[in-house]
Amino acid sequence: MKISDKEIFGNFGNGTNDMDIIQADNSIQMKCYESVNFQTFQKTVDDLLLAASVAATVFNVLVIFCAIKLLRRSGDTMHIFIISMTVGDLLLTVFCHPNEFLIRKHEFLRHALLCAITHFCNWLGLAVSGLSLTMLNLDKLIYFQWPLSYDRTMSKKRASILCAFIWSISVGYVTWVWMFNVVYIGKNCNLQMTGDQMYFYDIFMVTYCVLPVTSSLILSGYLYQLTHEKRHNGVSMGQSQKFKSKMKSLVFIFATTLWTSFSLLPYRIFNICRMHLLEWNTLDCDTQSKMNWLAHVLLYLLFLNPIINPLITGLIYAPYRVTLKRFLFSIPNRNRSSYSYRNDQTDLSYTCACNRRSRGYRDSEITLDNEMMSLNQTMQTGMNVNTSSEGS
View 1 (spheres, rainbow, N blue to C red):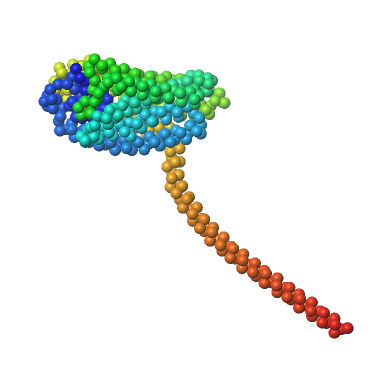
View 2 (tube, rainbow, N blue to C red):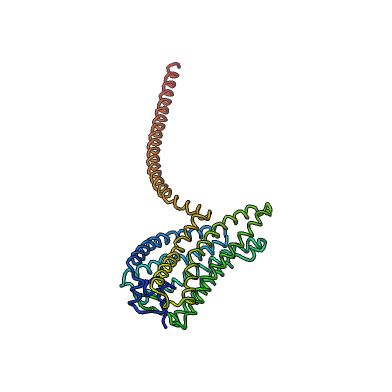
């Protein structure tokens, strides 16, 4: 029994084949799913998300740039986890999602190697992004729960090691699944696996997608309660400024966690229910068609996650907003300054030349005056000598 994996891992091919867990007759699938309205909806949203992915790629790069700059300036470990999370999102927006949309539109792109690389990177980006978000919440939990031990517990080196560990286990699991042929590329570039190996997908979905996001949501709720109590109890004067600075970062973490939970969890929960609780072939066409619409709406919501994430980081978190604003506004000023510098250099050269000419002219006048004064003195001396001779 082969299981189509589009609703699990990607959005290739048509919605008919992809949404059928136990593949049924193609004519029934066409009758149930391939409506004109659905095809129009799919093509329109694909085009919009393709353009949004390109724009999100630029924002993800800018967020990484700001994170590196702020990390060098402040040394806050949360920027390391933001870099890791944003690189995972960047992998999705720059390569995976655009390829999924383009492969569905153009058959000549449906090469097995390209499809395999796209699915591989898709798994990797989702896993890294979710685990990094969990570590971001854990970093703040350590600070607010044990503030005196924070500097010793979470250093830049340890944060870097944790991020390297996240990437290692993510790459390791995905590589293992591919190396041992647990999954393979099927028709229309869909990722497929046999029915007795579906637990590999269950492990991936629960361990790398559902649990990290759920734990992040729980940690965020606990952090909100903890900081609310600390704020009412008050903090010492020496810690007040640092406490306020950390509090501002929590707004960004809350927003990111809530958005990730809202955009990722519904589709994952829907898949688990559909795979293990529903007998797909026993449903009538109308029910299957409605569930197909619901699955694609939730899938497109999942695609929006790495597109919106950099906007939340860049607009809500104040240090990133200020750094990004300074960088963007400094570009025209930098060009204007360079142009003004060249003009100043030209004006300065002209002024120096004029000054040299004026100085040379004044020097010649001074020299001439000195010569005239010497001549007058010589003539005056001669006249005095002659007068003295006549008097004798």
